[in-house]
Image 1 (tube, rainbow, N blue to C red):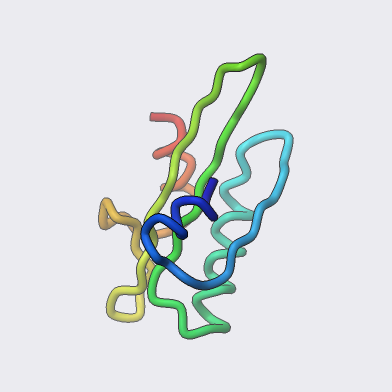
Image 2: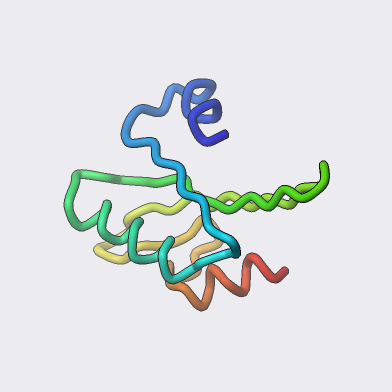
Length: 89
């Protein structure tokens, strides 16, 4: 899904897919923070999709580096607590 979005929007860079039993905001925060710290990354699209018996829920985050602070599109600090709050809403 992310790969298709990147192709359509002409976004190049890393593309990774992970499978978990449930939403894991700590993993997402650690992984994305690591990407920002180890590369010249300016922005990142990440998210979560749940699919069960043909029904799905999905959320995508656009995360960008802003004045040495990682922010979500909603200008929330990028941390596991805020990711969890966004997913629950």
